[in-house]
Length: 142
Image 1 (cartoon, rainbow, N blue to C red):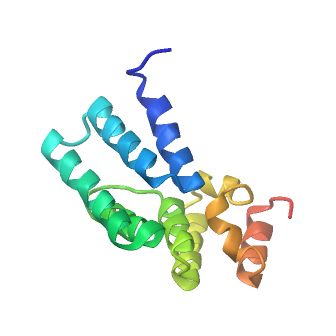
Image 2 (image 1 turned 60 degrees about the vertical axis):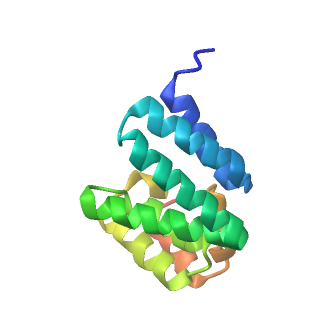
């Protein structure tokens, strides 16, 4: 209804990512940056261009690699929930790093862990005993 409602664009961004619709995700990323004004237009365009370049060069893996780089950069400048970083590592297939960051999320009581059972990023980790243990520790149904 309101084209300038930032949270709607942010949810669309995440939904497009989860769906693997990276071009749409990149467009929404730009909208989110513009609406929230968290970064200058120049920085937003640079970051969006990096995501586009990563996607053009290596498809979804390239996109997620750029997202990881940007998210780790954000974490150096301020707080980023460890669950978010774990999810990106999981999407990249880097299981050990994903569980390392998931454990940090657990130790910090990151509320993102409450969604680990439904987050598609972790689909490739569900059969891993570390995933089963994490779900048990968070006290979620398996």
